[in-house]
Amino acid sequence: MRSSIAWIILLIPLLSLAQRRNAHWLLGDGVHLEFIPGVPPILHVPTGLVTSEGQSVISDLQGDLLFIAGHDSVYNALGHCMPNGQGPFTMEPFGDVTQGSLIIPLPGSPERYVVVHIHGTTFEDWPKATYSVVDMSLDGGLGDVVPGSRWTFTDSLTEKLTGTPHSNGSDYWVLLHEWDTDEFQAFLVDGTGLDTVPVTSHAGSPHDRIFILPDQNNNFQGQMKFSMSGERIALSTSNGGAQPAPSIVQLFDFDDMTGQVGYRMTFPGHSRSYGIEFSGDGSKLYVSGIDSVEHYLDQYDLGLDDTTAIQNSRDRVYSYQYPGDPNIDWPGAMVLAPDGRIS
Image 1 (cartoon, rainbow, N blue to C red):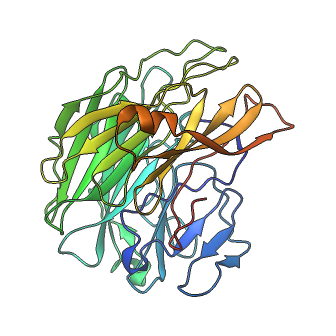
Image 2 (cartoon, rainbow, N blue to C red):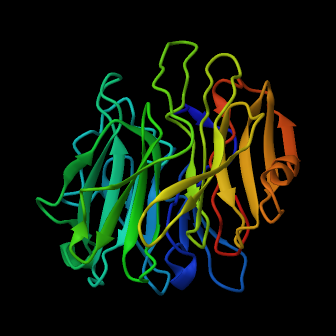
């Protein structure tokens, strides 16, 4: 969580750039971008929705906006909370979550979508995940959360939430990371919904559960992303409070048939990293963060032959000195746009 964002924050974790599912984006101050093939992005201002972190947006196959999943609640295309869309944890201190929501089409049900939220209720009750189903045939075609479809299915989590298609071409995987351990939890989503029994993998470094104010260790924060192919995962942890501290930035392999995660490598030398993203072809990895008072964007060449060569390919492609408080105004998250650019 951060009270403001230094870079444009785009937390729209859609699973594919195909078929215009991610044609609409919402940015941090109510700005609405629409992507149409062959033309520059269209700016719609204002939207009436002021967002910060953790929102997801989904469109239909033609690129028409369907609905928005906020930190805890679900909103229709008009920006109104759905009749049954109000979540149970709206006033939680973990309202701002790095990757607080994820929307997935329910396989075999064109009008239905799975929505996963990450949220917690107190500083001692660390983030948990809830599942619900949105049916776009309800409320006169504006959509609504199906009554009784919301429940909590796992807890003791970090703020990392992402997803990718299954190798069978119809189902999906939802991936979470447990706090204070090295455990990944992959949940299968098929035509019956979300299987609450995860495929677990132990890989990489533990995301230590340390929270000592004001010099807090924020291992629960930071992005986790799949490559477009679904074969790789990268993650970062901010891991810093009032003073810069080393972050965890790691790369993993993913088996999109079994849901298993395997460790590949660590990228050393990062301080307070937060955002992470792959290039469209998966050949480059980008990491954003803050080193002392310098905000940075680093690039790695994943196409090189060995781990050392990839680690040594680090290129600081952008940096700047931010005039605000570096402990508040951090570089934000990153996402791959439909036009192939990263924001």
